[in-house]
Every structure is written in structure tokens, then in C-alpha cells.
Length: 491
Image 1 (cartoon, one colour):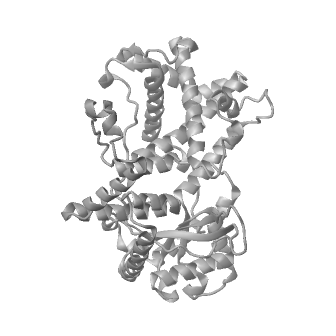
Image 2: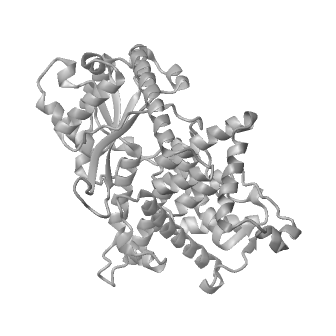
Image 3: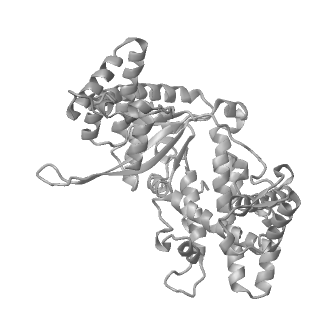
């Protein structure tokens, strides 16, 4: 209901306009319920006024486009037919049949456009990336009867992502060929790994220090105090490294496929559907290097299908030119889930001091923390635990009582602000602090500092993605949440 309410309010008042009501109108009972106008007649009057306004001049044309746009939005959001009929009666949207007709027209145009794009892609250095994901939709019937029963549709949806033209202009064409790709894979097999390759450089260590201090300063500003001179204080956001373009990506949706990619046979049917939608032949589709995105199960099923067709030198059968990579959200979920599972502890043991204790103290049920279908909730819970621990560390250094938290914020001069942040960083956020806790055999402190360190990477990843700064994403090559990840590498 909140989603429907916000959607309707956004349509009724798109510019957040405030319409003042004159005092005499609000206090007059005659205006609120005029004589001769029954309550059931008012909607008909409103609908007739909206109909007249929608058929007068350029504003009427714009109004008709708005009602059609609203009808498509209502239909795609899953609003019931009864609600949409009421909106149509009020003049706020077109009928559902009009929306379906418009969607069919858009689908035909998109199909032609997609085939044209893929036909031109044979001349491009990089083919458009195809992203696919499984989808399960349940149509629930409250009262079952013959021919009307609850059933679940299991299929696959996806889209084609065209590479940015500015990015393509910076690439070397000689390094984007099939031969260059296979040659690079052969070099990986002979590569010698050195532990120093995974160690951060001095500039990276300095940046990591600034990230830590910005996170501490952010909690200090939001929960405890304000700086009297922000220009001289440690900032609440780290310095930028590599900010990506804010331009909207060029995406083209694929028609939903009645084939599930949960098996080798299913992934083959998905490829057949993609080839049919792109207008290419099998030889044309598999002849070039085709990058694709998918989750871990999709990649495993694809490798199973490719192994069944080996050995073969024909690209159409061996599928060696199809390159799958894990989607960003799926990879992040697995890494974050591994970190959270490592620190969550045992909720059934009251003596266990894992992260579940912090969740319970913050008013959240620990058994609902790690949910595969709610990635955002899990990240938010980790961020709350991290900020709560930093807030406690700040209160210790400032010698504040817990009861004073939430009252009027303190005013700290810039030097006091900076010294507090530095003290918290040196005492709780450095590798030396973690080593000292281990030497002192203080298990609780050691585990807490390790939790702070791991959760800091999660919070930094979330904030950097929001800021569009991919250069700030901290490498997680040392984390291995599951051994299955080793099977999805090209080599």
C-alpha cells in the first residue's frame, strides 16, 4: 500500500505543488457540501471536468499522453484491474485495454530496434553485453476452480547493454580480438603469483586511512557533535578516485523467455531464444566474442552445457567465444553474506558475543538478518552495527554518558574534532590495535576490532557505489565465500 500511495501521489502532484485553500472556502459548510449536489454525483462531475480539460488544445494532447503513461505504469506495477478502472473513471489514466495495446506496439518497435542494433554489432570492437537472470512469478488464485488455479511461471528475463562510445574510443582495437582473448588466457596459466601482488601500496594505505577517518567523522557528526569549522576538520566523505559517468546506460530489454536457466537444457533454450530475438543466426552469434552477465548457477549450467559439447572446433558447438562474468550485485551479495555469516555468531548461545547481540540491541531480530531476497536489508543492518560500534568508541574517547546521546549535539572546535577522530582510529581501527588485542588475549576486543575492520569494507563499498566512485571499491580478492567461485574463471 505505501508503494501504491506514493505512485498515486506522484501522479496527482508531480511537482510537489502546494495548493492553498482560502479561509472562507475551508470554513464554509455550503462550499464543502453545496445544495443540490449529492455525494455520489461529485465523482461524475470531476470526471467530466477532467474529460473536457483533456480534449482542449495542446494541454489536452499532453493530458492524453499523461493518462496513457499512467495506465502503462499502473499495469506494469501490478495494480488490480478494479483500481485501474476507477482511475480511468476519474480521468487519471487510460483503460487497461489501451495500455495493453500500447505495450504491444512498444514491444514490436523494440524488437525491430534490437535486431538492428545486433546486426550493426558485428562491425563493433566490443559486442553489447547481454545480462540474463531467472524470474519466478506466481499467479495466485484465491478461489480455485476448473481452469483457474494458482501456478508459477519460471522463465528468464534480460537486457542488452551497449558499450559507451567514449569508453570504446579509449580502447586499443588490437587487444579486442578473439586471438588476443585466447592468448591472454594462455598467459594466465603460466603466470607466477607473488604475495606482494596482493599487498596494498603506500598510496592505497594512505587512502584507506582517509576512508576510515571519514567514516568515523560521519558517525561523529550524525550522532554526537558538530564541528565549529568544517573547513579545517576531517571531512565526512573520502577523496574521490575514479568517478564513473552519471549518464544513463543504453539498455534494451529482451522479451521475457519461457525458458528457465536452472539446467543445461534450460540454458540452451535461453540461448535459442536470445538468438531468435537478436535476429542473428547461430553461426553469427557464436562467431564473435560475446560477453554475458549472470549469477553463479547460470554460469555453472552454461559450463555444463559447454562440457557436453566438447571437444569441438566449431564455435557454434564449443561456445568458447561466450564469456560469462558474475553480476556485480550477485558477487557483492555472496561476499557480504560470507562476511556477515562469519561474524553473526550463535544466537542460541547467550554467552556468544557475535554480531547477533548488536542486532538484538538495535531492535532487529537476528534470525532475519541474512536474507537472500533482501540484499539491501542485510547491508543496512551491517552498516547500523558498524556505526553503533564507532559511536561507542567515540563516546569512550569523549567520556560521554550513554544517557546524553540523542540530546543537543556538542560543538567541537576543529582541533578537538580532528584529535578525537585520530584517537579513535589509532585505538580501534589499525592493524596494530588488532595485534595488541590478540597479544593481551582479550578475545572480545579482538573479535570486535576484527568485525569493525570487515564491516568497514562493506560500508565503504555501499557508499562508493552510491557516489559512483568505482575506484574506491576495496579489493576483496582475499575473501573466498565459496569454493564454487573457482570454477567460474575462464581458465
